[in-house]
Image 1 (tube, helix red, strand yellow):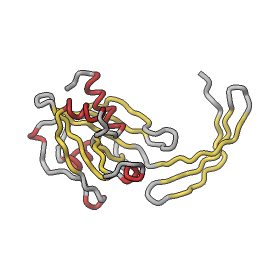
Image 2: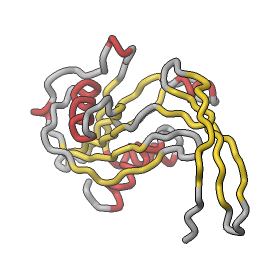
Image 3: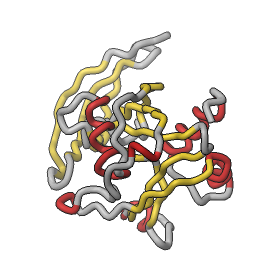
Image 4: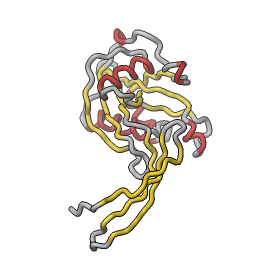
Length: 193
């Protein structure tokens, strides 16, 4: 497989408000040996982690629902999105991050998680690598109502849904979040729930 020779010429910060939007100019050697100069924008928000909690006894999963402005701008009339619990690493390792996010967002305190894979979620424009986890939960692990952190502007609804219903919601458009669809499919493909 051809690995192109790439040299970064210049990086310009276009925005550093919430995260960082860079314009990167670089040269890339093509397969025919010629070199081309290109410019692309890349949004750097850091890396993240996501988890799908499941219960094999009840056949249920824990999901969240919250307002997502980009979906509202792009046709989601309510702006509400059903998704698996997730968050940015914030200098934590992925496992510690996802345990913290799980407790903050869902109210479940989990101690054992299983990492299943990593993926670039939007490699054409976003630098983020997402670490994917699953974990079994039980009612005894519920220690708070969850809902996220008020100081982060989070207003998260916690949903406990039958696994088969959640999976069907990916087909009818009620669940349109890629990371959530990937984790639900992982549970189905591996006959976990």
